[in-house]
Image 1 (cartoon, helix red, strand yellow):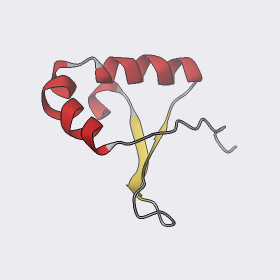
Image 2 (cartoon, rainbow, N blue to C red):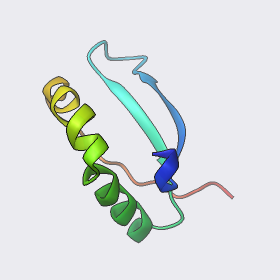
Image 3 (cartoon, helix red, strand yellow):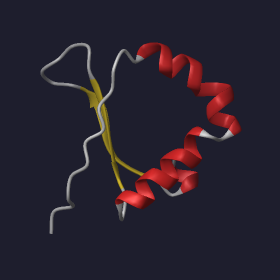
Length: 70
């Protein structure tokens, strides 16, 4: 993610759900979020090393977009 310009702010297990995990990233706009996310998941590295094992662990996921605090 770092190589593509994606900033990971925090990640880890949910404090109120033993089966949930979060990944908090920051983007300058919704358009940037879409473009950078699509570019990440289209890389050969992602496809080869992460796609199958990561997707096998995900039963459901939610994308939440929040404003950046000023």
